[in-house]
Image (cartoon, rainbow, N blue to C red; front, top):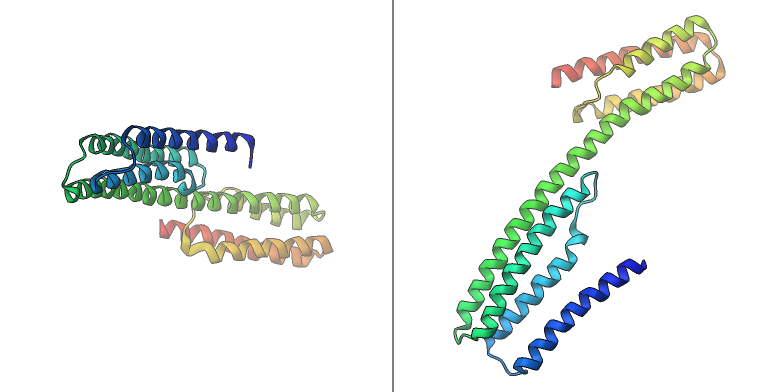
Length: 226
């Protein structure tokens, strides 16, 4: 655990200590049920604010994810703090009214928090899919470029170059239904690499022709799916 994290924890504990010190020194230990209910909900709101970082979905937009969840938890904490302190000062006899009020507030918080988490999950999943799609063309093209530089025979080199051009110009956007096809193309590129390393011209040409068909078929299917 880093020094900064330790300092943040100390700061958070100090805030909690000050609140409790003021509460018990000023009002003592004997309280109505309504007061203890509000006391508990204030602590719950503070704890939720502290643990919000642990429920943030990691991803490219982690800052945006964190801001939205922090905003929801912070607003809930402020609302709960002012409502809770008001009940602590008023000390109403009707604890049911206090409990129901607190329950409504925490319910609204839960709805807002979960809604934001669902939205963040959808965005993060879309980002991961986008990165996967980019990686397919990017990695496959880079590997083919490396293979192309290793081909010495002119005819074989032209065949591999055609595959490289077709793959390099392929749409980055993909579709889940093409995952198996794209995996097959990546495996074929690995096999082509082995054939090129062995220097077998006929097999290089054959693999390149087959790979070109697969790449074009993948692009054709993509147009139909999108």
